[in-house]
Length: 218
Image (cartoon, rainbow, N blue to C red):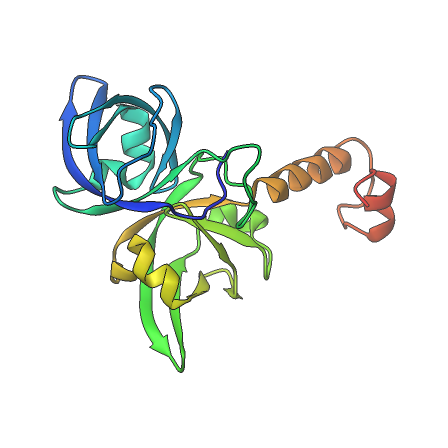
């Protein structure tokens, strides 16, 4: 489990592909302290297992072909930067929100511009994921925990503070770039429970406070 608070950016070095998998080599800007082989690391929001640590601090990960197809890891170019976060320790602070590292899909940056004192990032909405988006709710973009500020059926928007611009790869995004999206895992569970409740004889498809209370969700 991760929090969406990025620990370091990393430089993508190489991708050695075989028939149905690949090995990614990434060099962190800040060397990992006491890395553990097999530990989970979020790479642009995608949970990968650390397989090897090289002498220069570079990290090697095994990646399935399915992961390369369903995330932006398959699009990485040499020297491109990625976000890195190690799994949260039980004693750690939950500074962001619960991020599983299981990317729901990828989407396209529609715009990234300064509006007044804010930097606003707008991303094309993924139709299949729309039910999990909640105004002022949490979203992970390339593994970064952010708050949904704007939301409609065409796109969603987040506002970025200077720290996020400087310490993550989001500050280097441009129109047309592809980003990894993970919706709030708690929202997905609630939505699934409500859908199951409605499908099991709840009658009207309209969700009311009474129905949510009867389902034990409130």
